[in-house]
Amino acid sequence: MTDDHFHITYQINRITRNSQGNKASVPYSEGAVKLPGTELQTGKWVRANVTNMVAEFFRLPRETLAIVVRVQDSKNRINLVVPHPSSESNIAVMPYIELSLRDNSHKRTRRMIGMDCTENSKEVRCCRYPLSVNFEEFGWDWIIAPKQYDANYCSGECPYSFLQKYPHTHLVHLAAPQGSGGPCCAPRKMSSISMLYFDHDLNIIYGTLPGMVVESCGCS
Image (cartoon, rainbow, N blue to C red; front, top):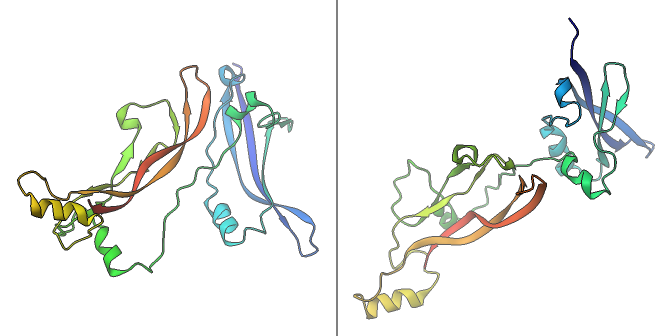
């Protein structure tokens, strides 16, 4: 019985400079993939964890010049991950890095801390709450990455003395309480996310979608 699978190995190297100032290739990680013969033409996406490498890049950005991915088969024949990035037809199969950044800053003011709450918080005023959106749970299988992201949402009451972004809203409510609903808790600042997805023709598209993440909440 013949093995109709192809054994592929990959190695991820970090290109940096040595003490003499010359370029040096430093191995970071490696792995192996068994590729069925039916996928030989179409290929297969492989996920590799490069968290420490990326963290090192942010810490010392001048020390990392490039990231090189080397792929070879069981006969030590070199396989190109993508022929050349200059061709538009190759953009869909170019290696990419998916990042999730978290703000570890502890320099928030007391007012800012009050705006971020958890599900178990007893805060009744306007707050930003965490909300993770999983695209796979919605059946959105046309999204390649990210599979989920932190969208967040706003909820809470708006007393007149709390987070008054638009004083006009409060004055209108005081002048005509029957004709105004008063201030409500709503997103004050939104940010975008980058997304990799299939279009109607099954082309892989990389785009940025605005207004996808609630960064802060306020009463308006």
